[in-house]
Amino acid sequence: MHVIPYLLVDQLPFMANHDQVRHYYGKPLSIERLEIGLQALDYGSWVARFQHNGRLEEITKRAPELFLFGQRVPFAGLETFVRQRDAGVFVRSGFVVSPRFGLAFVPGEPDWVTALAAHCIPTWRSMPAV
Image (cartoon, rainbow, N blue to C red; front, side, top):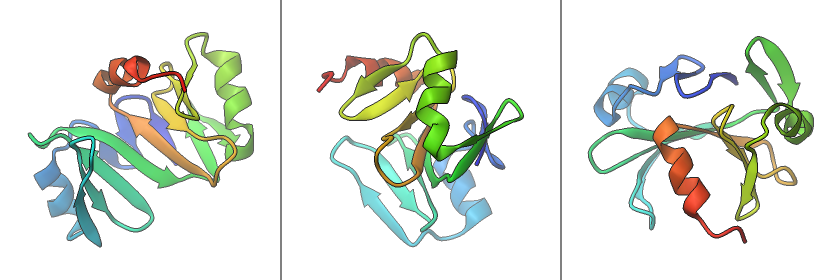
């Protein structure tokens, strides 16, 4: 998974909207309206989540390794990597959230990583620190 925080995940830019993603990637395996009000397009190996107005919020992918600023980071070392390089890192509902890298992930779980749009960080911060 190649990430340019808040701008791009692999070839998918955060400025893409719902219709553009469907046009480029085709029909998803499923479309679901989530309890938090987002619409999820599930393509199997990755999921894109959008606000009701079509604005892209999150991209979640399997990521046994990430490439951040040209550096290869195995998922197993991702928590250490972000904690060493992001003084603003915080935990919400078991997710490690890195504002610097625009990522959220659960270290002890399978290697799913969520890349976040910049406007999502305040929402994650406002969640209870459970």
